[in-house]
Length: 457
Image (cartoon, rainbow, N blue to C red; front, side, top):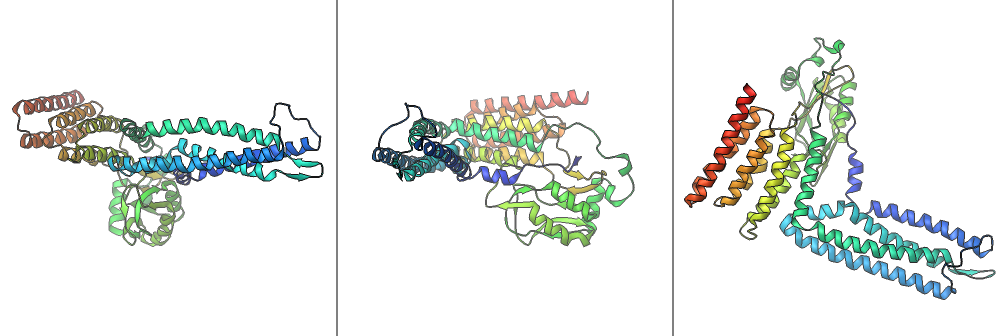
């Protein structure tokens, strides 16, 4: 059981997936640096301080020429390099799916690269505008021009990094490994390792409706609860569980959610139920603020999305147009790693209690069988007649079996293996290939039986 606590800040996550936030911060930083260097240049012009002799010397015209050259070069490089990069990513997206563009926008290195270039451009323009005529003659911001030249050298280093970074990031193994890392992070967030401690205070264990077991509350909500409708359509990206639990406590109610992050909800359709029925109106207003919907899924509370991404790459690779078996094998390796991590976690009920231990919110449960089916069904269907992929599926299932914590999980994996074997029997014509497939299935079945026997003992 869970208490309502702090959740990831979805607003911060939304800022991270934009190309304007980090550049805007760096532009402000560049502006502040210019203000400092300009004030120093002004103080040096009026002989209030003495600048080092190694700073750039020259008249106002030479200073203008340098700053114009820097500004023109930077803005040209930004336009050309990012245009070519987006074109390359568009071509890569045809094989990897639309995630390539989202990952490019979300990548901090890309955001910092754009920000450094634009900040240098803004700094150079500000320094160029500061060259003017004062009572004692032309004002040449020596320190500001020197800093602009230094920033240009930094931009050259950043450009080399950016080209290398993009070239590495669009390579298929790196794309798949990146999705796998996102999957591990999402699993750790959604299924944390918890201590088996009863958090409900003894004083809360009473016969009140709001302190019953989840099963009893679910039956009560189903029979006498009020329906809450969705305010807008879209993929459910974030659910404010803690916020909803607080609202439920304020109105002395219990909320049961029908959808979890990753589901598509339709405006005007039921998304939750609340007991008592009279609190449905207040909960509906709170739900509109606590549920964040959008045009696409995110990984913030939806680890299945990462599995779907790996599956999409795998079935694209197995299509006749691409026919890239090794990419599918790589995806299966990482899928087995992710499922092994999930199998070792406890699928606790999504039940949120208040400070007194009373149940206030019951979320939509995760389903281990659905996760396994999402991971292997489409790949199994696309790999008919491909012994190498079929064998790797069975190997992946065997690897996941070793990480399971219950006989129910192992039965789900064995059922998937049986479907793989039946598909292979119908589609593989070579007898020796079929023998190899049967050997791997027998290993899976024996491993399941051994773990079940050891668990029973």
